[in-house]
Amino acid sequence: MGVQNDAPRVSPRASPRASPRGKSATLQHLFDLDAKSASDCGKKIANSNSTIGSQSSSSVENEEILSAISVCHFIFTFTDPSECPTQQELKGQKLLQLLSIVKTSKKPLHDHVMSSLISMISLNLFRPLPPPSNPTIATDFPDDEDPISSFSPVWSHLQLVYDILIRIVINNDPKLLRGYIDHQFVVNLLVLFQSEDPRERDSLKNVYHKIYSRFTFYRSFMRKSMNDVFLHYVFEAEQHCGIRELLEIWGSIINGFTVPLKEEHKLFFMRVLIPFHKAKGMQSHHRQLAYCVSQFVQKEPVLGGIVVRGILRYWPVTNCQKEVLLVGVLEELVENIDPDQYRKLALPLGLRITRCLNSWNSQVAERALYVWNNEHFVKMISVAMEEVFPVVVEGMEKNLKWHWSKSVRQLTENVKVMLEEMDPVLYSKCLEEIELRESKANQAEIKRKEKWDRIEMAAAAKPQFLQPQHFLCVYNK
Image (tube, rainbow, N blue to C red; front, side, top):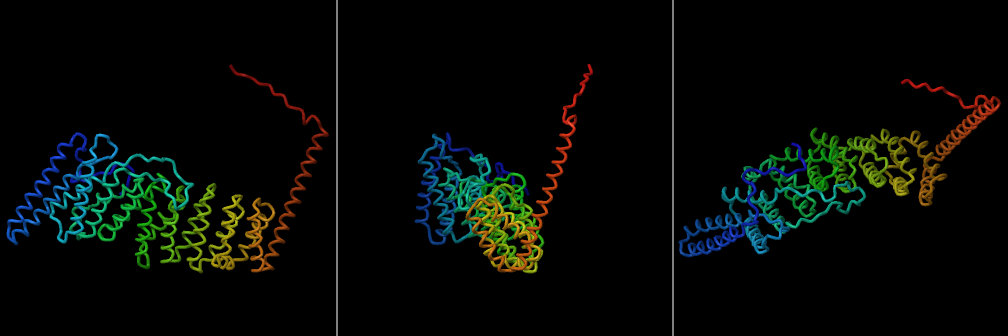
């Protein structure tokens, strides 16, 4: 089921009602009825016997909940000057009352009460989200900052609604809630991850993950719905506020997978997680993505080769910050890769790291040079030294001759000393081959220059070849 970035559909039981604008008298009437009902019910309980009192207490509790729910159906925007602050405060009190009842209630709520409660929650949560305040794709923010953050003025009410919802999910049997929290309800929750308020996304993450853990019969559907959001983000939209939170949910899900992995989970790894590395906004969620990938590789190390080739295939051309991140991802992957794959991956990884250390961006070059401090990477290179050394040595010599950064040249010199100690004979042989190629290139350049000199001398001996040619232009009318 695809998830579009538009206003969510709301189930019939949660259809919106009129806003409080122009309804203050009706809302105040509900508050008066609620107070009168509570007073009358208190007198009845005091005059009844124990058996009748128990039944009346349950009835009074249901009446209190329904009365509070009726008040909470009124939606406030907190931006409309015509809204009454007193009514906003009273709604907050009613939400607190509902939260207290849901927390302390030891018996399942009546069917009619639960239906009204879920309807109220849907009406408050499932609303059209405002257009993005920053439509451009932010790629220059560090991973510990939120590039898209806009705090909702309605959060004082929304926070209580989310607390009520998660308490309902925790305290009630999922089979009993199945009739109220259906597929459409779950999809509507997923749409809300587009909210720019990080507080709401964090609450959504907790609610969605709790539903996933308790509603086992919804797990396949919820995974597929999240996958649709991911694919839409990677291949179409390239902007989504809640990717970080959704990946955190997936990290917990992957942690619970059993070995050997199912085919469904491997397909998710190859078709969704690996293409994630080509997204332009990867900087904002690369830690969560790296955790998900590492969980897969730890469970089945053979997948390490697949993800390394995928990252190399999606390597950025002009995004230097992303290159720095991906070099770190490759270094972490090398530590979990099956050693049997070292020989297959040594050459492509060595080529990419060498290109990075030759980068004119000093941050990329330094990060690539630091990879040589990783003993797992050095061990992988040592498995295929005959193939990798010529490429690496040539890259080192280029840095020492041409790179503009003094720190990069110093780090290159340190790595060169380490490589010479690994295999002095092979290193000297590579240097000789480099000198031989340079000598041949110089001879070819000399021959090319001499040939052009002969051509110019021949042309100078026959001046007619240097005269401009005259053409006759014929126009057809």
